[in-house]
Length: 340
Ligand code: MN
Ligand code: MN
Image (tube, rainbow, N blue to C red):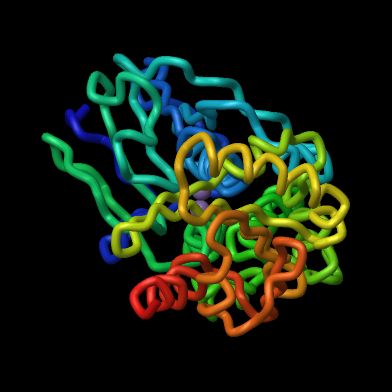
């Protein structure tokens, strides 16, 4: 047997036909059990990082490989809902990659890989993020600027004409809806939408918008989180012309949730602002359904008023159409700090 007998379905051009059915599928060539291949997404896994590996393991098993999908951390409530919905088992946890043979999905940064990745063998990488990968040996590396890794995996099914079981189509679709925020994210491509429609047919999901929002609702919530968690879960510090500005962002499906806890959140913001000497401290609550944000601000809120030409009432400011901190909040704020 040649040393390198791994030929993934992702190779384009000199395409290996994937076997479907037939008695020999899964029979190793010389009676020796094939080496186990662990397919894994990134740490702190999201729905894409759990579902894409499950689907890719299915493809490799069809090719007769001893493939298993694994995870590196707890699944979130959204992913739990998706796996439950399509009656798919939660993958086992991989605690240590040392000595294992891996395929990395939905990431290509070593810091996001399982522990001891440097002591593992990597066969393949399939991802849709910016490339930050370097490896001492040649690997199959497939990235596309798709909205989700699950879009790429679905394409592999279609290109190889592998029949997708309903539950696999369902979890791939869910992951695409999740990663693209139900096609609202600027990362969404035409292909994501086309492939989602195909997957929706197979998985018998009639209303993509409704189903997608149902999925997102499981996680985009403040429920069960302390005010400190909410403020710091996605937090960035800026220096605007010598002024210290902090901006946290959180996703919700309904701003009612924010208004209900507004006083508590503002109290916490004030406490942090004082303790850590911020000139301005903001929490940006983004309504992913209505594509708008509510800003809660403490400190020198005159900058906030200048940046958005709106009066701040009770430490609060509503901004329709604003979803991106990086593109829609930081630039006008920075300008305001420059001008005053
Ligand atoms: Mn991900
Ligand atoms: Mn992804």
